[in-house]
Length: 315
Image (tube, rainbow, N blue to C red; front, side):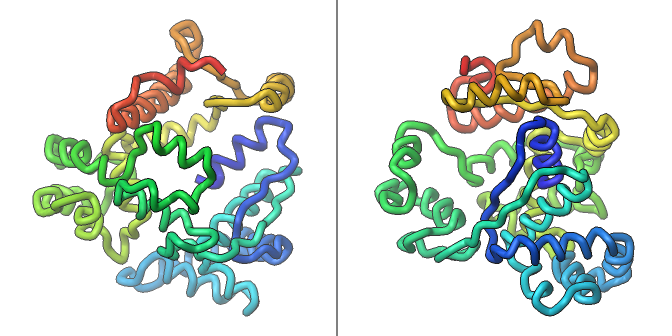
């Protein structure tokens, strides 16, 4: 979530700027939009709640914002990367953070463009091409280091999660599915029926999605099911309101930053996890890190990689 990412960076105490790609590189304009959304947040949400439930959330949100934005601002709120950038700026403002947001204009391909032969192909087209399992198609589309990593490491696609997702939904009870975070309004019954009909991940996504449940929401729910993230777990994590930073990898320059972060950060900083560290954590932090480890190991299982690598590798 954008709010979590900005909260974490702000808590490190050394981040003075974030850069993000967006369709609009006018940071002042994006900041103005963020200000108006913050100022009218309650009214906007009330407008959305009062709108037609048969229309998608995105469409209802767009119509609600029409009442509060200028024409040049309204044009920008429907573009995928602008939406994310505005959320970053909103959180910076809500935290009263000194972090400066800088938007970098997205050139060439749009967020959903599928042309892999573009000078700057979209991440969507790269992921779609990976599904063909022919890395030669990406030779001119990604940096050399990335292409080398894709050749030597097992990468995970949505389709790779289907068997695990199918097992989880099939073996969970209706009540257990209902307890999963973001599952509501009878979606548990639809999931049970859909998993029998679906032939693959994309088919399952197509069956479950609706105007009320967007593709992005359904994908999140699938991950929540695989990791067994319940409504109670999510609520407890929000109420706990504490974070930690886990460093996966670094270089020489990064190690210098780690030294500064260790002095300025107001959240725990972990470069590796062991039993001694785990034994000294409070219950809530212990549960959060265990979920993180479980998520990492689930990825390793799907990609046929060694377990616990993210938590035992030395920097």
